[in-house]
Picture 1: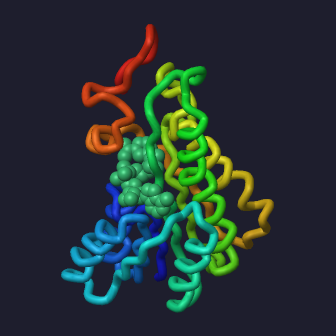
Picture 2: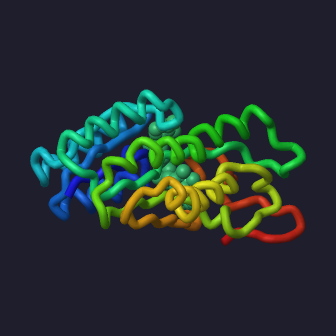
Picture 3: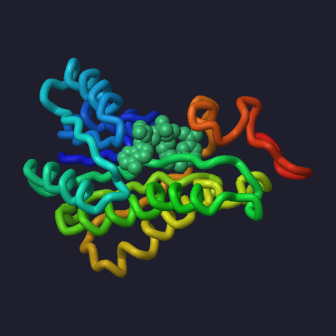
Amino acid sequence: MNAIITGGGGDIGSACARLLAFSGGNVLVVDAELEAAEQVVREINERAEGRAIATAADVSIAADVQRYVAQAATWGPVDVIVHAAGIAGPAAPLHEFDEAEFDRVMAVNARGTFLGLKYALPFVRDGGAIVNIASVSGIAGYPSAGASPDDTAATRTNSAGCSAPRLSCGAARRFSATPAWRRSWRARNCCWPAAGPVSRGSGGAL
Ligand SMILES: NC(=O)c1ccc[n+]([C@@H]2O[C@H](COP(=O)([O-])OP(=O)(O)OC[C@H]3O[C@@H](n4cnc5c(N)ncnc54)[C@H](O)[C@@H]3O)[C@@H](O)[C@H]2O)c1
């Protein structure tokens, strides 16, 4: 079983990488932060020698995506892809949300997922699985989330549910996972204060 995990140096991606490697798979751990990816690979290979490889790539850059896909394809057809690379923008109401921040977040969270699908689908084995990590915020709205990254997760949901079939990707199974918030992630990415999401008059911490 051959797997690609983007954002494999992060919380969700590294958990997926460990699980797949310890289940006997070959795992390509892709991350913009090579050191984070290498740390995960070291942990995996201590228990599952040779099962994991780290590679640095920016998922928003097509050439990087083509390169990591080609690297994984040397193992043979790809069985599993997890798109977990993502960034958080600032928490702000929509009308105050900075355009440059919006573009930055979209480049990674939406374009990165699109490029991952576009360039990897021809290498995915029939019956393979593609998991796009989205967010509960792509389903439910939060007042201070504005155009924050998790709203772009709606795009990731769409990329799994709508775009891929139009790309005639064969029999690959596509999923969109929508995690709720984990405090460690929010704290690190500075999207929400440690106490939980800010709400202006409604909503509140999950
Ligand atoms: N953990 C949560 O509570 C939670 C909740 C909702 C949604 N999500 C979504 O799940 C995804 C993963 O969350 P996480 O908790 O693992 O985050 P994380 O910050 O721990 O990991 C994200 C990883 O993506 C990498 N990355 C960022 N930009 C990249 C790029 N351009 N190219 C390649 N790699 C890049 C980072 O280096 C990092 O290792 C996020 O995109 C987030 O939207 C997470």
